[in-house]
Each structure stands twice: as structure tokens, then as C-alpha cells.
Length: 219
Image 1 (cartoon, rainbow, N blue to C red):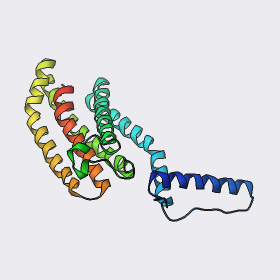
Image 2 (cartoon, rainbow, N blue to C red; image 1 turned 90 degrees about the horizontal axis):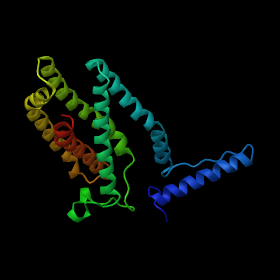
Image 3 (cartoon, helix red, strand yellow; image 1 turned 45 degrees about the vertical axis):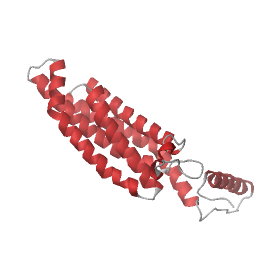
């Protein structure tokens, strides 16, 4: 017996789908279909991930265009896109280490342990969280950079404007990040693996963006 939602079950489904296609191609008039079980979920995942690169590219292109128009610069949008990609890459990579390779198994926390069925990510979690991660990071980024820009226009040199901007916005960004961390962290109490992984992606992205990217790297 093979669990249809497991990697082995998915491999069986894909092999069966290929066999059905070959049967239709070699026998004109035949209509062979796979239904029920995990077929709908696997087909939905394939359809979503076929378009996901377009979503990523379109989102980052929109961020670049809006930042370029707002600040009338090419450096500012490139820096924004780079820091957002850094945050997303870090959090997705750490999520793989956590739920596929068991990086935090030693903690004994159910919500941070290796996923069952050999360790795997729920396919919906990265898709569901990507736009939220980019949106939150961009929100903090625009808030900080706009203040630095205001001080630069006010006559401060670059270094002084950056320090002044961090001083004026740092506590607000930190407070907002901690509030979002507590709010998203409530999902760790769920017994659903999807919600645990979504909580991990959102909490880590907020903490990393708040205390590393906006505080240390952007200035």
C-alpha cells in the first residue's frame, strides 16, 4: 500500500499518467483518465508551480518599477530587490534545512521537527507566503529609506542621513517586527504541518528582515 500523498505515491501517479498518455497516443479513440486520490492535488501543484516563476519575476519587476518612480533612481530599486531576494532566499533555504533535513530536530519541538514521510515541504506554503514576505520587507524598506532620503534632502551627508534615519525609524520597525512575529508565531500551535511551515517562513523572514537586513545591511 502506498500513501498517495507521499513522494512514492506521487512518483506512482506520474508514472501512471505517462502510461495513460502513451495508451491514448498508441490507440486512437481511447480515453484513459486518472481520477480521485491525490491526482487533483498533484495536478494543482504542477499548475501553480508552472506559473510561480512568473509571479516571482512579476512581483520583483513591479517592486523595481515602483521604487524607481518613487525615488527617481536606479540604485535604490536595485538595492531593494537585492535585499528582498536575500531575505526570501535565506528563509526558504532555512525552511528546507529545518523540515527536510531536520536542522532543529535536537530541540524536540514538534512544529520545528523534520516533516513526516521522509521530510518534505507542503507545496502550498512557499507559494502562500512569498507575497507576504515581499510585502512586509518592502514596507519596512520604504519606511526606512524614505526617512533617510528626507534627511539627505535636508542637508545631511550620506552617513549622517543613514544614522538619523535609523535612529528615527529603528524602534518603530523593531516594534512592528516583534508584533508580527508574535502574531505569525501563533500558527506554531497548530497541528497542521502547512500552518507550522507557513509560521516558520513568516516569523523567520520578519526577524531576519528586521534585525539583519534593515538594521545592518541596508544602511
